[in-house]
Figure: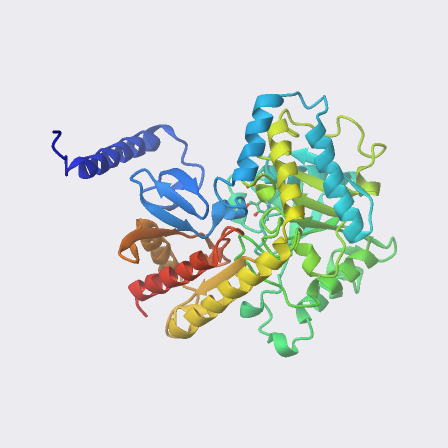
Length: 473
Ligand SMILES: Cc1ncc(COP(=O)(O)O)c(C=O)c1O
């Protein structure tokens, strides 16, 4: 009879720990540190994933509340979407972008027909592989339509990516400092961030002062943006995230975007709607812009369209901006731009979104999550604000003495403890994957799987409660 080896599990764990140490040593030596990996110390290595959970190299379980910055909206290892990849892999995984394949055509048609139905505007779709690259394509469309204008409006706190063009219209100078300028530039306009109103107003009686401040720019040519004789604006487009992503999941007040669009339309300024983070039901609708009564000229999308599998991004633009006469063959191109695996999984994702009522699902789950967050806010003074739309939720972490002064230090501690993986779930150890956003890097931006169960939402609230207790009040 074979003796039972009681120490096998412990040895396996210590072997896994040695392997993790070896990988970290190699990473430190051979990987560029230019990405954001080294924001955590030591960097975390994950090994497998399923549903709302991701597991580290030592087998520890983490409830993921940020789902790859909202790229994995439909849960890790989503069977239907993974199967679409496998089918395409066995049929036509590679084909040069100069030829066509069914999935690219059907996907473009589905997106364009949906937009036509919702916004009453004909349009076309151009694909690319990353969000930033699609932003670059949108800049080409904007410049092309406006006689080469390279100045844009964008929001303070806005994020549109880190390629040279995309970082020019991203609010953070930190992303540009080392590299100089390449052409496009933005004037950054305050976002309606009511918890920290840039004008010191209160939402209840502000009369949308902020958007009227923007309107004021066009009162005379001497405010720097408008030639009243030529009736022409120096700025070609306004790049917006309807709900700010990296900026801290900031949700604008009702009426803001409707008024902004009125101003833009009157001055012939294009509205470019960046849906890269908030699209695909993160904010309760296919496009976040559908929460507002506003029509886009261009939509830019990426991330969750493939559930974070083979990357795909793209732009939808009004027909006048993208028809083959104004945007002829060769206007833009990238080897992998409409890659067949990406388009196949994206097409399946679009069908899945059509087959299920994600609007109702995200409204119900979002309400449950937000109710839990509101309850936490009552009990923890470090929480200054909570808010949410669909399953885009925020917790703003502040100094406990006034629940208002932003605290990056407490936020960092919370995220580190969450990632240490030793919170308690009924006697078992578990971690939380959280992401930090916000103008002061003090906002926990929550983007759970849209497939999260109610039990997992309740567990998330319980684990956050433990976490806030651990950092103390
Ligand atoms: C709103 C928004 N725009 C653009 C991007 C850039 O996309 P990518 O990282 O795929 O280049 C991001 C990425 O986080 C984003 O959130």
